[in-house]
Amino acid sequence: MRPFAYVRADDVASAVRAATPAAPQAIAPTSAPSQFIAGGTLILDLMKLDTMRPERLVDINGLESTLGTIRPGPQGLRLGALVRMSQAADDPVINRDYPVIAQTLQLAAAAQLRNMASLGGNVLQRTRCQYFREPSWKACNKRDPGSGCAALDGVNRKHAVLGVSNKCIAEYPGDLAQALIALDAQVETQGPAGARTIPFDRLHRGSDTPEVETVLNPGELITGFVVPAGPWTRRSAYLKIRDRRSYAFALASAAVALDMDGDTVREARIGLGGVAYRPWRAHEAEAMLKGKPLTEASAAAAARAAFAGAKPREHNSYKVDLGQRTLVRALMQVSRMEIVA
Amino acid sequence: MLDDDNGPDQTRRALLKGVAVSAAVAQAAISDAPAGAATAAQPPGDQPLATVDLTINGRRERLTLDTRTTLLDTLRHKIGLTGTKKGCDHGQCGACTVLVGGKRVLSCLTLATMVRAPVTTIEGIAASDGTLHPMQQAFIDQDAFQCGYCTPGQIVSAIACVEEGHARSDDEIREYMSGNLCRCAAYPHIVAAINQAKTQMEKA
Image (cartoon, rainbow over all chains, first blue to last red):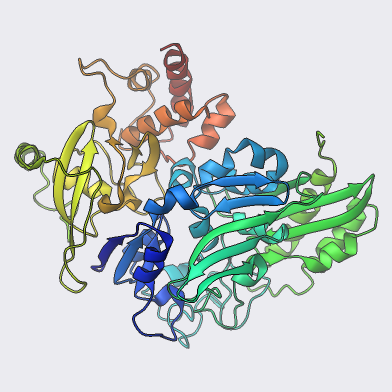
């Protein structure tokens, strides 16, 4: 690990100040010299690998009293960015009213990591692509723009099939993001230019600029998430398919929320994980399900639509089939959930 | 920056000598500074240092550390508490599990400067008279290890698993202990040990 200066922030304003570059720089936030650290589970791993090389870490754990709360209300759910994964996973109100959120967290990582990792950091977790993580591979457009992509013709069994380009096929590894994108969450931030709110589905950028992963600016801090209430949030669940039963990243996953009128779908909300370059909303599948009875056949047709644009490579073509089956199973399970009024 | 765990000086004898010296230094350094205070002393470029106050197994330690020092390396190399093990050093195996503020965390992905709450390691869980914690005794009774390298992390994690209320069934134990790998595959016995200790911990 390279040397770095370490500072503790006492409040949001001082955290942003400490992490804001002295002069405006056209630089990807992940390459900025100053980085925030909360749980540290992502950044310290990547610093040990020499994949991230910050010169200064701004410790925001002291902001937990303001950014560490869960506030459910009639309009929706507010999650502070420093809520730990385990805190939200075990929260009884989230489990009852937004089960898909609780489940994405319960099925992610392991107990120790969930006690450490913050929700804000969780949605910004970086790909597990081995050619990105290990800097001895020369070709990685994410680490070194213009250097190429070793994964295109390398071992790409775990890589993405949706939202990929010839610059990058890295998979987005997170789970919580699939629930937040499905439920139309908003991201609240505080940055050098002040506060702003970003729709969750605009937070992550596409694979045309692999080195710039989000729309955040250097020094901009996620302070929380707002998940709007809706008739679909209680009838929701997360299905995650992995190489081993626990403590593994998704090969394919589906976050599904349904508003049902008998057997008919009033509204469907679908996020897909493990298969896409970024958190993925399956709008085409949602549109096909809306207003129609939900059957195995209609679910399968919607799943085919969700993967119509898939671009598999040599080792990951199984994800097209696995991803569709995962979505179908999730839809059928969610439609059969018993909702206690 | 730090000696590698497998470095030439890490014989058991050198280690024992080191423990005696660092314990003496640590005792001499205890002061009244607020627990958890840390400051970065130098600009980047040279080896930035931080003064770190830690409470480990009820004992206060004041240390000046390279900012890069993890809690794991601090415990093993600076304090001399080598019960906490370094497995992968990347948050994938659980061998380095300790309690911070009563919660199980991975000390390999925690910087010492970040720690704000008291730390409990495997050395701090037995009673002061030496009576083993029920979880330690259960691991012996149930033969819940073979080589033993993952065992300190397993025991610390298992205590937290019971205290969190996530040990209500064998399935739940397996799920909530999945962050602690055991390459000897003592898993069935580990589940048995947690069930045994759970009963005693709930009575206590």
